Image 1 (tube, one colour):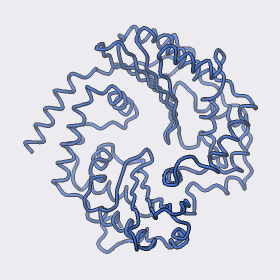
Image 2 (cartoon, one colour; image 1 turned 90 degrees about the horizontal axis):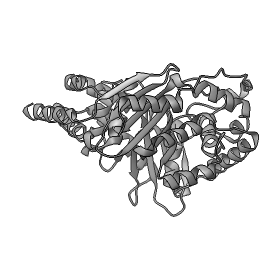
Image 3 (cartoon, one colour; image 1 turned 45 degrees about the vertical axis):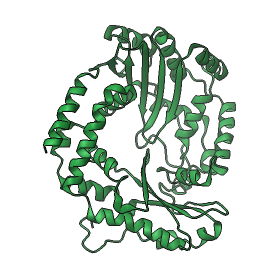
Image 4 (cartoon, rainbow, N blue to C red; image 1 turned 135 degrees about the horizontal axis):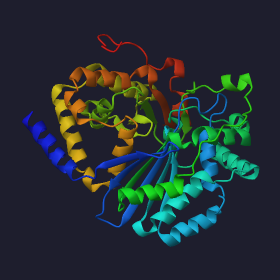
Length: 424
């Protein structure tokens, strides 16, 4: 406990040196968070737009990724994509766009003297992208080619296949119309859904002026009429595929993976500590666990002479064993120490500071008082929920002969209550 108290004190002293978060809201509903840091003449910005259940209509999986591709490659009212790339390169401004499971994100970095130009480019890309039928057909074809001929190694494609969410198909992508995309933009691209985080060499009044000039005219639009998918289309696309992904990799050894999506109702403090504890848990060996956007990914490579079914069972049994056993008090204390150690370094990492400010604005931030009060039962309850075998998504990559000998989906050893399982 003395070590934990010292770690908390060190974290508190370091956090005092971090910029204070200043927050305000524009009349259009856009929330803005400012972290002043005048040590370097740089300004960073991150704009996050949340995705919510129901944003993608039934029968339209792939709508958000296709829209993301459209915005990345679209002309705007002022610039063609090639002109934007040259302008960014010449000015030294970095502007990127990404799509995660929870929303769209734009990342911006520029010298403080170029902040007006940089924010103007962000607004141009966000608000004035032109969607036209020719671009839709081009990006639809490119997306289909990526789905049918995935890029990367077979093992990278396996990781992609396990990502949560409904999988787009040729028929579902073919059903997406320009009206669907325009309605999606009106429904999702709203200032009252957005959070803008600013970090760097600008004061409060300067930041308010900057945001007002670039994004102050952003107004929510009313979604237009949207073509309803036929009833059969909605039923044809399950939220989770029934088939286990099997990625052929001739001549390679068998690799099996399980993805455990993080539960949506998991307390941030429990998630933070489990993210530190589970990947390094010795009892999982030889299973390796990493963290990704979709959750925990457990990987096991088959040993020479081992059957595919045995490898499959070993992976599931290692995870289930940890789930039944849980962690002890020492594990909990060590994880707290590690978390406070990482938090104390945030003053040196602007991106981490912005991540924290964004998470706190969405109610996903870790609070030190709740972390200190977290019980061992609360930690292990979260572990049982996260590693619930019925929620695991399993897949494999390897020689086609080995893949054919793997159990079918209804034969997987998951979802069965083990004797003495407190989570059953």
